[in-house]
Amino acid sequence: SLSIGIVGLPNVGKSTLFNALTKNDVLAANYPFATIEPNVGVVGVPDPRLAKLAEIFGSARVLPATVDFVDIAGIVRGASEGEGLGNKFLANIRESDAICQVIRAFKDDNVVHVDGKVSPKDDIETINTELILADLQSVEKAIPRLTKEARLQKEKAAVLAATEAAHTILAAGDTLFSHGITKETEQGTLLRELHLLTVKPFLYVFNVDEDELADEDFKNDQRALVAPAEAIFLDAKLESELAELDDAEALELLQSVGQPEPGLATLARVGFETLGLQTYLTAGPKETRAWTIKRGATAPEAAGVIHTDFQKGFIKAEVISYTDLLTTGSVPEARAKGKARMEGKDYVMQDGDVVEFRFNV
Ligand code: GDP
Image (cartoon, rainbow, N blue to C red; front, side, top):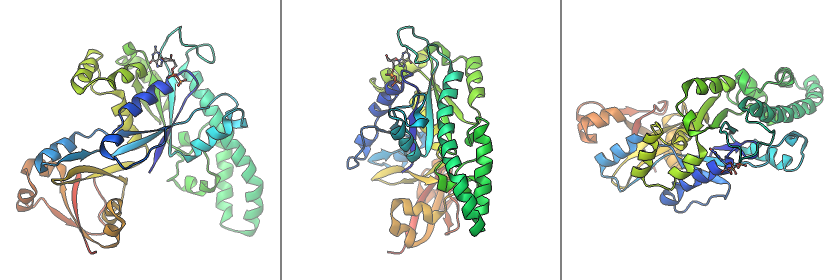
């Protein structure tokens, strides 16, 4: 499955956040047979539709979609030169599908900042510089080889051109992502063999003081620093306290600081979107479940997430939208009112589709 690597300078609150993430672990409760690594936090993507469906279908359990967060230690100045944990750090980032930077914005004289002062802008630059330098090395190593290959293999010319364009961006101190280049774009596809870091989608967690959580001016300033990446604001200390509380107590604490939901819930949802994922839903007496698919997946691809046989033997999908199911109140009623659609193999799954697959075995 896809994962998000959590990186950040020392002492910014990564461990605090990560501990809160793992305490919220939905995995233990819902996926008892799964094994997880100690540095992986599996977080449920909040979706209020699931509880509603479970009510309609009398489901015994609810399984939300999940996002995997990987705690990647070891970013320091010089990481790109393989200093200290640098090499391991870069290898771990390479395996992640998105990069989540934790940035310190909280002020606390008792917590030392590695560079002596709290400055989100400088910290972002420090981290991005290491990632950009690592990519520059990869690109500079590849250009002479690609130049030779392009003389013999015509199709390599496009890879060379994309690599040279990437070099220009990186040499100017920018990430490829900030120039709109991702794995899915044409440029990104050509660059795939280089395994670059800064083509991965970025997102930013600002670890703020409680009183900054609702400070819109402050938040807009930080958003401007990281656009087009998404910014999430949370108080890691508060999140770790929330993780210890039951639902009612947590809600009370959230209301006292003017937050609609835990920051971790926002992080899971934004992370899920950053990975380019979406869900479709299945519901029945046994369980109501959100299944994870790539945005733009077709009905057979969606079926394949449940079981490869479902994809191979796909005949059609009976689809009812969540809202239609909610207003009609049951599958037979939805069918009677013409709200159940039979979709074929070219159907592109939509958010909120409640699905039952028909297939040959
Ligand atoms: P890491 O090195 O990035 O993993 O940082 P830690 O999670 O170990 O946090 C470093 C120190 O900062 C610890 O003493 C934490 O208790 C403290 N800390 C973490 N988050 C916050 C926060 O939101 N506010 C304050 N005041 N302190 C925090």
